[in-house]
Image 1 (cartoon, rainbow, N blue to C red):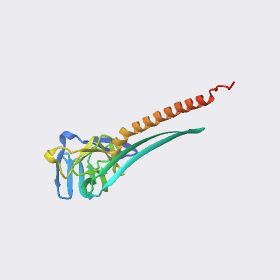
Image 2 (image 1 turned 135 degrees about the vertical axis):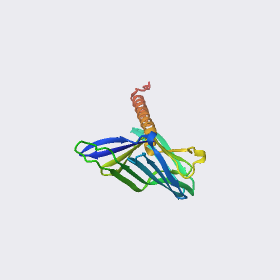
Image 3 (image 1 turned 120 degrees about the horizontal axis):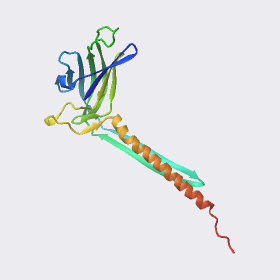
Image 4 (image 1 turned 120 degrees about the vertical axis):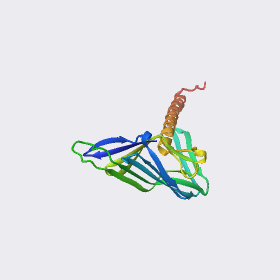
Length: 217
């Protein structure tokens, strides 16, 4: 996971990275709550994730796209259907990050700026939600506004809580940003192919109707 702090002062932005080689990890894991803290040795920067697990009833998510074309004379219909189906088993636990807090104590970000700290939190949310025993994975950047002057950018994120057998990640559940990047080109490509096919069939249909027939002697 990559973490970047974005500080906004005097309508300008400054960027600070959380150095992975210097990070200290600590926290605790309870029955329904867990805490993961990532801090630098001098406590000049830190990220704190509070996890929660709850029971999830059966829920289905379906995405479906249908295209129908074209009417000329009599109806010519070309249709395609793309469906994505995701089902969560009944009474399966899920986990998510309910609270994320961050703090940063950098050197002054500009010559006229005072030496100050920046902190904030994203609370009462359901971030990075996935099934218990699965891992949440997101290659796309996630930008979180924790205060008016501090944002947190998370890259190549993968996390799992409440059940990590042998210290290995479970089945990966991708974020919507990665899902859209993977599926949108497929949908657009399917639409373009359907449109080209419709135009070709319409052209053939019109040409056949304009072709002169045989006259009766």
